[in-house]
Image (tube, rainbow, N blue to C red; front, top):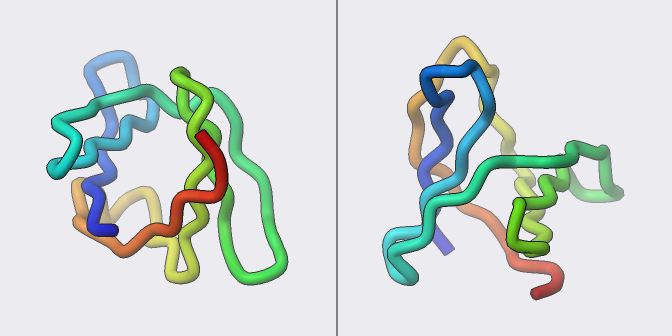
Amino acid sequence: MKVMLRKNGAGTLVVYVPKKDLEEEVVKQASGETGQILTLANGWELEFPDFPELQDLPKTVEAKRLSS
């Protein structure tokens, strides 16, 4: 799924999922076997095979939902 990564005013990483009209802060970041894994405040885990550099944000990237 396509998601947008950006930083909010407080400097926290935020993920926006357009198809779900969902915007959540990232509460945990980890490295997985095939990419970066972000855990959102609502409990979702998203895996990013091509995670962008943080200075390149905001950016739309492909993500895979691992859990709900």
